[in-house]
Each structure stands twice: as structure tokens, then as C-alpha cells.
Image: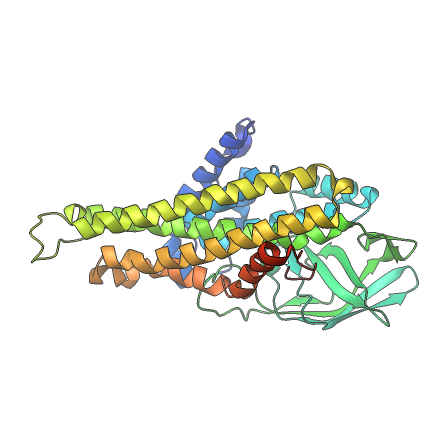
Length: 393
């Protein structure tokens, strides 16, 4: 059972600056870190952890949001992912919807402190949306539904019957016909509640179909920013997991690791190869974090003026995101793997939980092939080719 406990943030003034929000995120991470390894082993539904996120009020612009996700993921990669996906689905109404729609959604979300989940996997056209008068009816199944049982509302996605048009709508997570299955049993990210969901005749008014006016979708180039935006969510919880691995390993090395008996040193922290490894991995992490922050700032300029986003500015941004996604993937996997070289055999004990960092980042970095991210960058460099907006680019 989780020992995560609520904190009296609601009695304190809300943070005012980006750095204040990141400090608040560090406080959340400190609470999560106290029993992260034990919670990972238990694999229980993270109700208390999500309540902790709600109580902390972690809401802000995208560059700050990414930093907050990174900070939380240092302590618990699963909770960092849940928070990042919450940010994305909370913002999805603004991405796709009309002004009237997103103003309504954001007002209700703030008033009710909604935590968002999503049953969205556009690669599989396994949910059909039919019309029934002024209602839409969603029927089918999704293989993944991150957030599922811990969410207050769920973003549904399906294909409008007889068309190629995708429909997104936000429904209460306890809607009749929405059944979340407890079948997420993967190598890592064990607390993300990412199992499958059955959608059996879930009804919602036509008026809630994001971006539709008089049953006709109103497209904007800005609608296609969903992929680079969520890919930056991925980047930042990967880097958070990597940072957490380094911090946890460094503590172990200082407090528990023994020097090699033939190395001639009395402390592990004096071993030259240990010092070199920590220096190498930290430099790589700092470089990837700096690139991630720069790209996030570039993206915020597009979010600040959605109607000005063009195919060119969108494409150039996606290339930058692809580049940092490739770097973050390589760096996080390297760090989560190599920390064992400087902590030693005893650090593989289950009680230490050091393995969870590698398991978490290895699991999610398989979301979409990193080789195709490098391809986007290479084609742009050689031919000036912009990535075609798809569900993965």
C-alpha cells in the first residue's frame, strides 16, 4: 500500500514564477522518493500519488510544465508520465477545439481539479463513432489508456463511421460503458495505469466533439502540434528518470559502495574510473537537458500565437523535437544502464530499486522507433524535407 501522504500546499500561496513551480515539483518528488522502489514493486493503482499531484497544483506554461515533469520523474518515472499526459490532455481542448469549447473545458477542469487520462491510440482504428441524433456514441476497444482508473475525465478518440475523420471528446472516467482493465503488466512504468479499455456505447453530445462546428471539423495547422508537444513530454520524463538514476546511484556510491580491493583506494568515491563515469554521464545529461529547454522555449512561441503556425514553422519545430528525442533516448538509456558500473554488484539488490530507472526508460523509449526521429532530422538536413504530420511525426 502506498505511504504517499498529502501536503498542506492548499494553505500556502500558489507559486508565482517558473522557478517557484519547479521548487514545488521538487517537494512533490521528495515525497514520492521516500518509497518509490517499494511502490514500484507493489504495482498498486496510484490513487494517493495522483491526489498528491492535484494538491500540489502543478499548472503552468509548457516550458515550465516540462521542467516540472522532469523533476517529478526523478523520483518516480510513472508519476512523471501520468503528470505529463495529464498536461497534454488538459491542453488538447485548446489544441483541437473551438474557443468556446476549450474555455469551457479549462474552466471546468480548474473548478473541479480534474485529472486527465486518455484512451487515444490513433494507430489502431478500433473505436467507431456513430451518430444518434444530437449525440455521438463511441464503441470499441483501445489497447492503452494511460491514466485510466486514476483519472477524473478521459479523452476518447475514434473514427466517425463512414469517414476517415477522427473525433476527440472528453467524458467522465466513470461514464457508463467505459471499462478500464487491470492488464498493464509491463517491464517498467508500472504505475501509469496504461492498460486496455473497453468502450461500449459511451455517449457524449455532438457539441463536445473537439473542433467540430455544425458537425464539420474546423482544421488549423496548430492542430498538428500534438505530436511534437507530447514527444517533449516524453523527452522530459526520460531525462528526469536519468537524473533520478544518477542521483540515486551517487548517493549509493557515497554511502554504500566499496572500493575495488585491488584499486589502491580506501573509498569508492576516490576510484578514478568512478569519478570519470559520473563526470561523463553528468555532462551528457546536462547537454541533453539544455537542448530540451531550448526546444521547449521554441515551441512556446508557437503556442503563444496558434493562428500564426504554418506548415514551415510546425515542420521546423518537429525536426528540433525529433533531434532532442533521439538524444534523450540515447542518454537516458546509457545513464540508467551504466550507473551499475559505479555502484557494484550489491546495488542490484531488489531493496535498492536501482533497476527501476532502466526498466522505466527502456519500456517507454520503445513507444516509437528512435531511428525514425533521426531520419526526420537527416532528411531535413540533406533535402530540407519537412516531416509530414502524422500521429508519430
